[in-house]
Length: 313
Image (cartoon, rainbow, N blue to C red; front, side):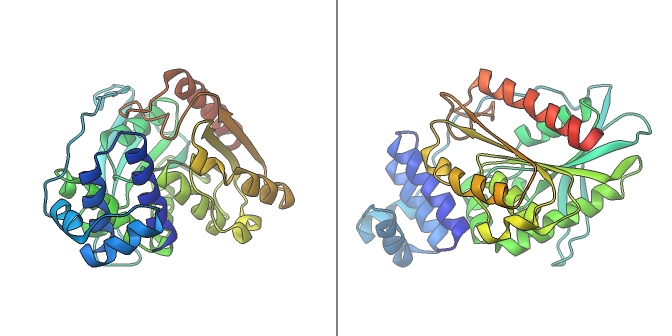
């Protein structure tokens, strides 16, 4: 099991233990990630759980459990101050094109750019909305779809766990390559400030932000929200100013804070770490069950201040 796979399945287990994911759905997802019933058993055991092969097989053959989502749209696509649309652009590591959602302010600029990286279920409406929110604030934002090599998030709309499984099975180097493609695409947009590109991501996307900034020294600012740490030995490669955001109740992710804080201090990385009291993992997502409005609103203000300092200056 890769680091990314473990990150995702541990999140599923956490949701199950907190009563937000049914056991049958957990087993179905584990079987998907494992690639079959045979490997799912040992994977469960490594997570401190157990199930018979019969129970796993029955769950694996079932339909996905659908959970209600709030809408949470803040800036509509029709807002007269912005332009927004789905785009495709070349992918350096394969024949399938990259897919993204580009939102920009109306006008000639110049504007800083931001690569927006989704959570572990792909490019859902919430992340397009964040791109539009950034456009309203004077940024050209490209929300990437890291499920693009498999046809894009929309292809898995009926079962987003399959999109998550694809992401977990994608090598981190391939994900970083796709994000570097996004940086290059942003730099080609008329009116963008090529030397003022930042990145922002949450959950799975927060972890990928960490990996991206260790591999791309051209980024000026980064904001990983409750993302798992990159390889600590890569932290000295970071040149971006990093705003790292966490929720107090997110025990699993917060266990990595001391190591990343110490590594950034040793490497003299410009950074700020903020932990929101009473907030859990995914507190920023206004379409999810763990949304915490006061923390999300303050995190947005803090993020805009950070980008103002390191992208607009």
